[in-house]
Every structure is written in structure tokens, then in C-alpha cells.
Length: 273
Ligand SMILES: Nc1ncnc2c1ncn2[C@@H]1O[C@H](COP(=O)(O)OP(=O)(O)OP(=O)(O)O)[C@@H](O)[C@H]1O
Image (cartoon, rainbow, N blue to C red; front, side, top):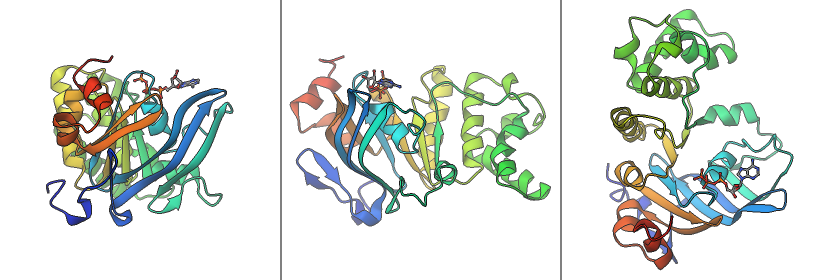
């Protein structure tokens, strides 16, 4: 489905930022400011992330892309230096509300990092890991879910005959797809991807990009990338950040071909590192 054919996704421009109807939004960031001690990293940032779309965060090094992504599943909770203001809503619920379980939030909002990080165990056990933590699941159900997750991560055909082999025997690209399968196995609604292909060769990168495009039929995806061609290839919407601020947010094709602000244009045409 095209990003613009669904009327809920019709652009509502406010300045240089698109907005979505609340019912079309999966995540809503409201006035989020975040500092590491005295050093501000995000400044009163507001945006809605549309459901079942790929949204890319781009911007120069240090602009706050990863900080923002990590805030979406509360990865800053253990950093006592971090000071936060503002709210993040997942399906309308404040993710910092006292009744929210962080473990359940992280099940619903999965995260994949730059370097593949499979656990030191078999391929099967990696994917089954989260299911085992969830408690009693029959072996039959576990086997079915492991197969489903590996198929969804486009890895099943490469590993189905060696599920008991060590995950570390896989190539880097296969390991990253295994990590995605491990995340999918617990049934997330959102997948956060922090430079998921930057450590991979070009063919593995294309496989991850194809996977991201395919997963949006069932998931909401948010991608941090340094690679503007990658953002252009896989995302429906792009948010450009600079100095911790949201500068421009719009449909990816518009933002790359006809940005509304000079700051965005300077960045995407390479006039700024
Ligand atoms: N754990 C931390 N402690 C202190 N400062 C941090 C921490 N993590 C990030 N920062 C600072 O916060 C700012 C934003 O960093 P962040 O990693 O979010 O940027 P980024 O856009 O993802 O950068 P890059 O593209 O280089 O990964 C930077 O000034 C960075 O130095």
C-alpha cells in the first residue's frame, strides 16, 4: 500500500513538519527534552510515528538520533545522569506511567542495534529465548514460533537444517537477521533499528532493507541511519534532526527532493557533515 493512499496518512503540514491523525499514530512524542547531566541532547521534540510505516531519523553525528530511539523503549532508565521532560505515548498510553511494566514495553517495542548481538547459544535457542522467559509454552508452539520468526526474518531457508548450530557460526548479515527473528518471536508491535546494516556488506545490507520493507505490513518500524540513500530506499517518512531539535519531518520522497527548509537542503545535499 502506498504511504499516501490511505486518507489517514494525508499530510497535515505544520510548518516544516507533517502530522498524522492520532488513530494513525503508533507512537507519539510530546515535547521530549533529554539531557545527559548538564548536556542537552534533545530539545522539546514532538512528532507522531505512523503505524505500519517505516520512519527514518536522519541527521549529523551527535544530533540525538540514537538518544531519541533509545527513549522509545526506555533504554535510558538505568542511566542516573539522564534528565527527561515530556511524554512518549504508545497507542495513547504514557510509557512512563507507573503501571507500565518495562519488560512488557520492551516486548512490545523491540530494538535491534548496530552490531549483531546473538547470544552464545544455538540458533534455535536464540530465537526461543524470549518465549522461554515468558513462561510455559509447549514445545510444539515454541517450534512453530521459532520457524515463523525465522521465516519472517528471511533466514529460515539458510538455517533450517542447522538449528542446533551455534549462532556465532552465522555470517554477520545472518546474525543480524537472527537478532531480528529473536525480537520478532515475542510479538512486538514496533521495531526500533539503530543503524542495523552499518556493520554489514552491501548484499547483507540489501537483505536487511528488503526485510524492513516487508515487515511494515505487520509492524511499525523506526530506523536510525547515517546513510541517506538507505533512508530514501526503505522509509516512508523521514525526520531530520539537528542539534537535538526536529528540523523537518515529511514524506521521504518530498524531504529528499523538495525539502521545505534550507537547513534540511544543506544537509541532504552534503553541505554539512
Ligand atoms: N551515554 C551518554 N552520556 C553522555 N552523553 C551522551 C551519551 N550518549 C550520547 N551522548 C551525547 O548526546 C548527544 C547525542 O548523541 P546521540 O548518540 O544520540 O547522537 P546520534 O545522532 O545518534 O549520533 P551518531 O550519528 O554519531 O550515532 C551527543 O552530544 C552525545 O555526545
